[in-house]
Amino acid sequence: MQIAMLAAGFSAGEADSLRRSMAAWKRKGGVHKFHERIVGGMVERGYTEAFAQGIFRQIEGFGEYGFPESHAASFALLVWVSCWLKRHEPAAFLAAMLNSQPLGFYTPSQLVQDARRHAVEVRPIDVSTSDWDCTLEEGAAVMGKMGSDPDSAPLAGNHIRPSSESGSDPISPPPEASRTFTTKSGSDPHFPNQGQEAASKAPHPPVRLGLRLVATLSEAAARRIMAARAVRPFTSTEDLALRAALDAGELKALAAADALTALSGHRRQQVWDASALHRAPELLREAPTFEAALALPEAGEGEAIAHDYAATGLTLRRHPLALLRPQLARWRLRTAAQLRDLPDGCAVRACGIVTVRQQPGTAKGVTFVTLEDETGTVNVIVWKALRERQRRELVRARLLAVQGTWQRDVESGGEVRHLIANRLRDLTPLLGELVTGSRDFR
Image (cartoon, rainbow, N blue to C red):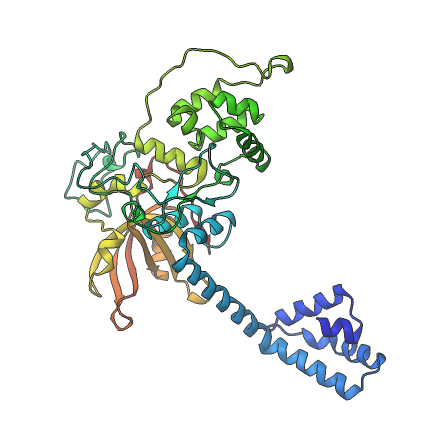
């Protein structure tokens, strides 16, 4: 582009058109249409025609192979740098990825789940400490309240209604088994929050989630919160609302995201406190109100997780499938961790939240699905015949059960693993009001 501008007198717009034609290296009618413009422009500026023809042939040749090769080299460099950062600075990598959303295949929930499995402590959004961006905090990582020692945690009842036919086909659960996603508060000792125990010993700094993750909250409101907090800490939700000039919608968004914990307590109390604050007339805007506090009961864990996903797209509580695991285990639906070291060729059943569906044009009708549970991810391959036979389940399911054959490439050290699907089952009703999303590229 610079050669065309300096040697042939191209304008910036013309040079960009040349770049676009070079990028379309597989299509005909590209670079050659600039032949007369480049050669003629160079001759007019004192270059010999032979030299100008040679320059054009180099440009044309680069359009044939150099452009895609340069993109491949650039991508390889990005991959190498990203892998180094993820390996050696996982906390900084996570914060940067979250601050760059939306991007690629990976949602904030997937990024946070993976980081916590790799010993990175992630701390919740909090108006008392969170900036607009996700940040790194000083101090050693500490275990979160949901990551308690599995040997000492109390056994809490997960009130997910079990199937009345425990021996029934796990891929075809009876209708009465599809209950809503609700539990009482507490922790299941058999499924502790992944990554938190390791995080307590990790050398990496903790990541504080930023206010940018709060749905519907503007950056301007977040900046006002940061500015008011810099003057002095907030003492109450009312103090926050007055000094940061927050309206009812902004307070509601913060309460829904559980960001007022330090000021009001659990989420239900936050929502109550936020809803009671209305913008006063100008004369009374700085005047505090005095009312007796109303103590509300805390929401169940399942409800809290559902609200987390609705307000921020992720949760720092247990993974949703950890709550459903006892029921899924009765149906012999294995976790990603349980599948990992199984031998090649095993007949298995697995279940997970659908995070990615891909159907590349070069895959001859094959669909690739990624399922996520509390222990990791499972890559599922759906052949064209099964896709046509069970398209509804494949396309619509948010919680998908798969029966199929486990494949593990022994020659590569067992690191290439995937599940070849033979049958699909949509278990989305088990999620109740939990809202999840997937990246679908068909």
